[in-house]
Image: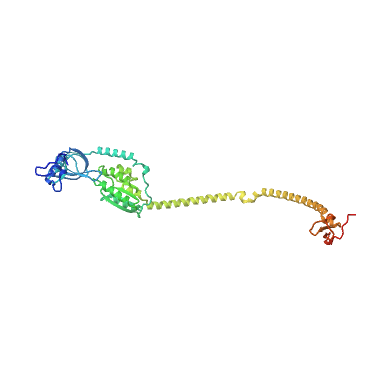
Length: 419
């Protein structure tokens, strides 16, 4: 609906407003197309930036597609040949265009007519790249801490390269010369112009999702500043930063540093340099192993020789020639201590023997047996009680009399006092 006027019938019976149309009362095409053209004609002139594609010249007019450099979106632009005759305009040119939309009612087509076209200069492009570099750097996309190390023995390399050119041959042939067992997953894409960014981004996403790919390589092999512009594109740079697989950038020479080089995990100056970085040199590794083995053997031999010499030197010392001499002082001290111990023990034993003899004599003198030997006897009742007084025994009790030698049994027949 273009207006908010009251609904009134068209003189010919058609609805006046678009919102009043129905399936039973539609507008014919001849009625709609002019309204669309009138509405679009009210739009002002506008400056638009993009990349030129499909440039064609016909009947004093130039037709082209103006494509956005970041997303897959484009406009159809028409301009008088005189406007661009002094410009080196070609496919891939980066331009700003002063356009106004026009709707061709007869064909129902929307196109944009340009009255001015200007090439974006090198200085402007450099300024934009530097501005983008600052933004991405502030976000940390170029931080060395986020860069991933390359695997030492990659089994599969994902290679993004041109559909035609030497980059693929340089990477593959040089890598296989260094490490014949390496495999490649190759995606051939457009590496310059308007289609480069989406094709490279899609190839990176596909290879990064492949679990068998151990390292990614984007190879181009240099070119002019304009040729390398896609590799400083924000969309491509952010896609490279999002890759989980280690990424090697090899799109320029020593003096060319697109933003992809800064975000990549490793920057190679050429495709040949990329081949050298992604795989080890089997010949060099073998030579290194031989060298290290030789060094290890020499080191062990030197250590053994040194230890043998030290052992020989130690064996010449008196302490090792006659080691028992170390024991002589201790042997003498041990003999002296042993003599002292023997004398001490003998003395103690003699003293103990004398004490035992004395005690034995005393024991014999006090022993009941000695008393018995002098003619005395020990009388015991039947319960074993020793009879010391006459009152302990009664007439008729059985008693046992212990003599010096043996004992006798008796019966008490009479008791009397001591006389």
